Length: 412
Image (cartoon, rainbow, N blue to C red; front, side, top):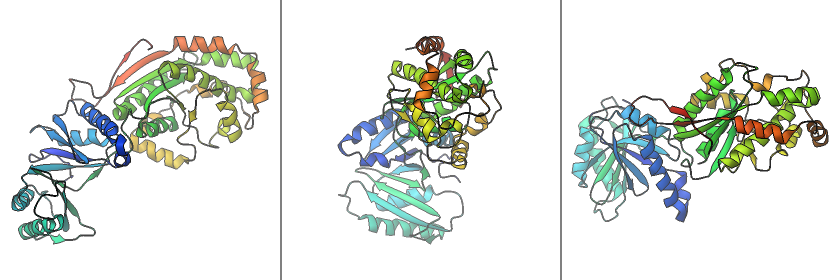
């Protein structure tokens, strides 16, 4: 049985946080945001309330709640360290032992241990004595072997002032910090493998991530736009609300085609993308840009080119994947569920009018000279004004399906 599998005796999910515990006097700010995000993520799946306890939270479930769905939702809430299915009983040790025995997983267990913790130290039985007494009861009822080092089943007992929560094993949460505690950033979202992972890593650090996709429709097909929408939907399952800006980039590429030397076009494209993205980011009150670039992965991502590209922006450009290799990024994308979307063949705007031999060590002087023939300000104004904006949310209130809703909306 999965530790949070559907079972009629499951009454709640107990959630612990990790990194938030280090926040000192600022901890209430982080825990309040985590509670809000847990409520939002589970609003439609039978969670009656989220209760704040000492160092943890409890999700109280309706009797008919699908615990598998609740587990899936909780596993994607940033800030959750671990969680487990739990039951509730009184504080008498014998009563605790009987409740645990009645609620044990229906499977063979090679070994177990009791891990007891008293939130209220006034309880007359110490944690060690509690572990021994409850462990003896479980062993007598099951015949299972006690193993304090590497148990096959860990039974957690948390004694509060007037009740006890007990849980079985623990599942890892998403970790990180709750979405929304670290401000806003804007991520340049291509249809590839890297940028969705970069966006996710910033979400995990507590950032609300706006998404910006550059496309070359109608010169190329709509495939990259369709992929960007699907990636936005998938990422919204982690941060619950997303905004996607889709920017037509072909007009700028066509202008660059006649005025920018071929080896410099890719660097000029990237600098123009940063300028447009920064304009959109500032409108959305974002404080930094994010890209999926990795040192040395393609010609535009040499250290020299990245330095020249960065100088087009006046806000910080964050690259959370900068030192990762492709295998690590692919593994992360597979875990997120973005990989199958990213590998769908498409016609990305970066492939349009790309020279055969792009510069790998462009200098700022030659790039600025190439850009002088472009009316960059007007091109940026046109691109920003024409950008399509779509909002996404998860879950969809009133729906039990695992999907996101999206709609076209006016710019903020």
